[in-house]
Length: 126
Image (cartoon, rainbow, N blue to C red):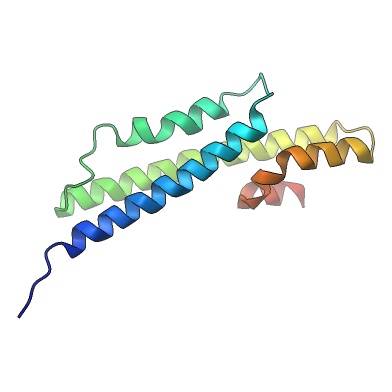
């Protein structure tokens, strides 16, 4: 009987790769959309979240305790990004409310368009 001990490590690495890829997309979009905003710390928050959450974590610890710690870290990251999305949705709503005509609205939509892939931000527009 053949036991493949590396499968758990491969799954962990796949999980971390998917997390990092998704984070880089989100960070790029937030940076692109908010580069001209002065009243938001969203760029800093999205940039520092993984470092602060995963800094003290051994992501290669495949023990039950290590697995639970990684799951908690991923959940914490999701909570923080949900809060960030809520703030971005509020910012979008505020900008749309302040529009004086359709042209202003189109400008706001064009700027925030990359964020409309995020569920919360898209819901704010409906």
